Length: 220
Image (cartoon, rainbow, N blue to C red; front, side):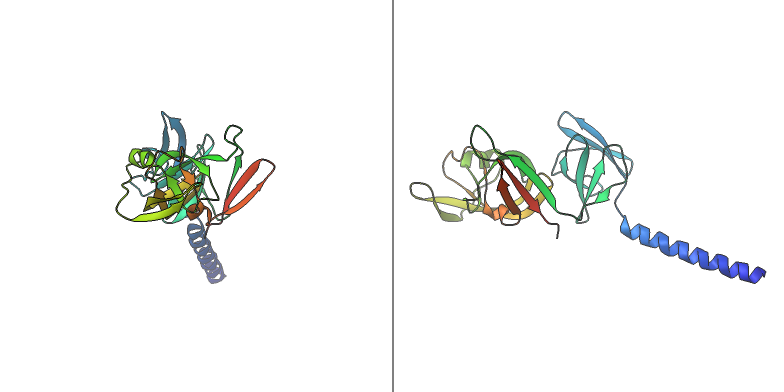
């Protein structure tokens, strides 16, 4: 009778260990506590250490901050994205598509969206007619992006011009961050705002109607 109890207990222990192993594989994100924002910095505790980050920066523990708002943050850890609600150390892995909704700007008539180029803040004008992410030489200088020597012919509304072709390390809009995005730098002061062109937009699903546009990116 005692032997039977021992076998039952041993079997239950094995089941418990298997369940614990499965659970650890399902959720392997570090302990992160989103504390809020202060002077443009996002305050988070990563494994107990307080970090002050801006979107695009990576903590000493290898946690990259993708985006942040008042209620939550999105981080990248070992190639996987997680969302953390404020003051909740348990994050949820993002396996569904990331979707951003934009409203038409009444002033310009286009769609403006906050984003980042190589981790630095910009305001994009969404332009499905532009083949590349496009910026002026003034903007490139402010972002510390060197034009290089690779030139390309581009078509404007009035003529064919020469511009510089570069590759951006990262281009981010909301929780969507893509790497190694081809871009061009014009030799002029235009466009006024960087254009979010098809070198980025080809990777997302675009829907437009009722004075708004949605950008949807499926995590692969």
